[in-house]
Structure formats: structure tokens, C-alpha cells
Image 1: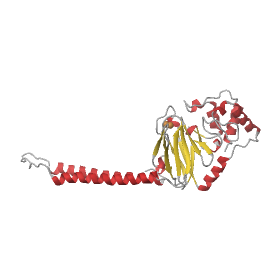
Image 2: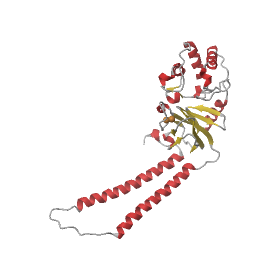
Image 3: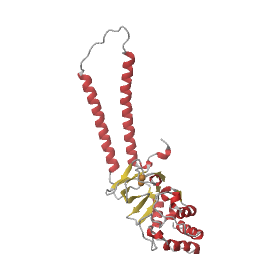
Image 4: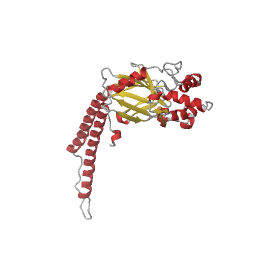
Length: 308
Ligand code: CUA
């Protein structure tokens, strides 16, 4: 298995072991059945001139054996499956709650106990159980980071959840795995697992409202944002922008990706995105801004990039 797909959660590890046990048992049964078949075909095949073989009807021992053995195997698999489900579904004490909300076509992450809202990047502390509460703002999506070890659908009118503990620091990328419209392919997930200290620092930074920029060009960017239709969809804590249609931009500068993974985050790509999102991600529910002057666009991108 490539290193990049190695599972980093105890829940995922339990599922992976179950898979290997099931695979080993299946391989054993397969080898046994095919082995006996091949031996019989080779050793006992009829040759010209052979008399008719002895005619046999029924064999109680064989009948019982090939009924009881598979039944036992199934019972073992059933037991192992139940045990794995108990491991995966176990409710941890005092988990970090994260509301994971699927949107066409991006992921929103709210930490209700921390007062933090972000998008595109799910940040978790290493070694602490987290409870992902999965809901959707529109259609069915599916949340899958391969290194978590399993995935879960995100369904309208239903609250699903996953208990996840990431044991290894790193950045793990995953896709939406349920077709949800034009930009289903650009509905990426980036899970960033950090040391508890780094997570603590991240949380404190995310809890801060934006401070008014002092640089005049950046302040112009803030003005452009506040006076344009940006505020119809986006929120920036500490300003009057509080809409919840699109991603919360309070700390957009701290994220490594924008547009749910379609671009790496930089002032240049932010400018490109705002100018004409349809050119970057056709179908995205954000209008273009052809009327911003180049200077205003650069100021706006600098302002957003500075929102760490
Ligand atoms: Cu969301 Cu596919």
C-alpha cells in the first residue's frame, strides 16, 4: 500500500484489519476449492477405455462438512464485523465537535464549542477524538479522506456522524465521492492534523475578529469588499459582512487552498478567482467581477490574503 494512503486513525485501522482477515479467509477458501478442483481434474479425468466410474449417491459426511464449515466461517466474520463496528462507532468522552456541512461545491467546518467557522481545510489536533457531524446545505455529498479509513454520506434531512481520531500529524486530501453537480470533482477536502499546541494556536487565531488594515492599499481592499456584493454571500468576523451563503472569509488567508482545492491560496490566485471564478471553476455559484479596476482587485486580494 502506498505510504500516502496509510490509515492514520484507530477506527480506520480496525476496518483495515477486518479487511485483511476477510481477504485472507477468502483466499484460503479460494485456494482450497480451486486446488481440489484442479487435482481432481488432473488425477481423476477419464481416459479412453476406462470403465464407468463407481456411481455414488449422497455422502452425509461431505454434506454436513460443507454446510457447517462455511456457516462457522460466516459466524467468525459476523463476530469480527460486530467488534469492528463497535470500535468504529464507539462514542469517545468529550470529543472535539466539528459540524461538517456539504455545499455545492465546498465544505464548511464549524467548531461550535470553539466559536470557529472555516472552509475547505478541516483542522484537527493529533491524538484527540473528534466527532464530525455531517449535514448538507443542499444535495447528497460524501465525505472521504482515504487516510481516515472509511467514508460517510452527507444526506439532506439526516444527521450522520463519524468519530475520528487522527494519530499522525500531516495534511490529508480527499474528495467528495457522491456526484453532486457540475463541480463535484472540485469539492476537495483537506484534513490538516496538527500537534495539540499548534491546534491551540490555530484556534486562538481563528477566534480573533479581523482588525482594520493599516496599510492604505489594503484598507482600500476592505472598502471594496464591504461596498460590493461580496457581503451578500460571505462573512468576515469583525466587519458588517455576516452572510452565510458562501465560505466564511474571516481567516481565508490562513488556508492553503481556495475554491475547495481548485487553486492554491495566494494573492494572485485570489485575484484570478474573484475576477472570473467561472473561468477557474465553471458552474461555481459565485459571480464574476469584471468591473473592479486592476488596482482595486489587487487591493482586495491583498486584504483577503492578510486575513490570517
Ligand atoms: Cu459534493 Cu460530490
